[in-house]
Length: 227
Image (cartoon, rainbow, N blue to C red; front, top):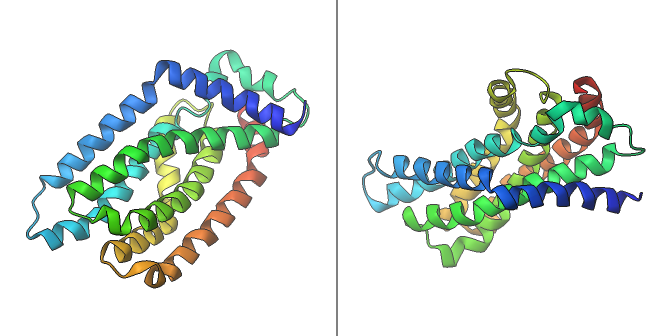
């Protein structure tokens, strides 16, 4: 079976199951709304102060929701040690990594389609003026974040405390990427434009390339160690 057919089969299976159950979408969306409401009622001064808080609220929400999504990456393959049988298929590691990454990106993207407009409108950010630029930062930041989360989910998939260990390992490793995303978003929200945020965007892209390369390289070893 070709790379594309293997990728489509794995990703299609995961997406069909998720769309049928919608467990992670409902849970993550509700969690996002709770986080935003808590931040909103934590007490701000003028509208300018509220707007400055928006980038931090946005990326804290994405980071927390990401752990919920990544924690389910290999949930079904863990049942009856199905991952061991899956690894017997020839040349499966590349398509499996790409499929799991695409599924995580799709789920995070679906949640972000709700979270980003809610945060920008709730915190007084002019969505029409900066919406496209903020969407670019969110897309780039999510790519590297999801790549790192996918490989860590694979390496921790058979451990009993995987749900606890995942955020403990993930957050320190992705912190530089998240900080660059916050700074880029902050400049955009302040009205400085993409030109002012170009330096931080370059850092985000550099971390994307690094995390994607390392994640693909380590993915096979992580699966073999957890099988």
